[in-house]
Image (cartoon, rainbow over all chains, first blue to last red; front, side, top):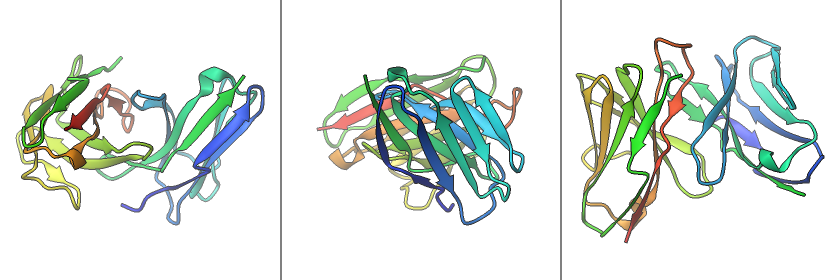
Length: 110
Length: 117
C-alpha cells in the first residue's frame, strides 16, 4: 500500500526541549498507530487514534489525529534522554498488517 | 498481556545456508502472523502474511521460494530464509494481531538480527 509520509527523518534536541514528528497521507486513514523503537529493539505500541480530530495524551506525549484523518502528530514535551529512539506512525490495512511511515529518529543530549 | 516470542534473536550464517526463525504467540492463538523486514536505518516493511492452515500471502517483490513461511499451528509461524546471501542480512520481526484483545493492535516479537557472511 501507499506509504505514510513521516517527517522529519532525524531530530536532535537538548534535554528539556520539545519534539514533534508528523505523518501525512494523501488518502484518508482508517486509523493511525504510533510505535517507539529503541536502538536495537523492536517496535513497541504507544497508541492508536481512530476518530477525526482525536487527541490523546500519555504523560509528556500528545498524539493528534487530523480532522480530515489524513495527518497525525506526536509531540513530546520536555524531552528526556529516555525518549531516545525512532518513532513510527503506521496504518493498518484491511488485513490488519501495518503500513509504517519511515520513522523519525530522536536523539536527546543531556 | 499478549506476548510474542521470537527465536533466535541473533544469527550469523555462511552464504548459501538456510536459517529458520520461529515466532510464537505465548498466551493467545493467532490464525494470522505478519513478517516484517527492517534494513539498517530504514522502516519496517511487510514481507508476508502467515495464515494458519493455508498458504502465506507475500508482498510484491518478496520471493516466496526464498522466504518460506509455515504456520504450523495456532501459536507458531516460522520463516526460513533459504540459501541466504549477504543482501538478506537484515532485522526480521514477526507480529501477531491479538484477536481476543483489542483489534488492530499488534504485538511484536523481539526480532531476529540476521548476518550473512
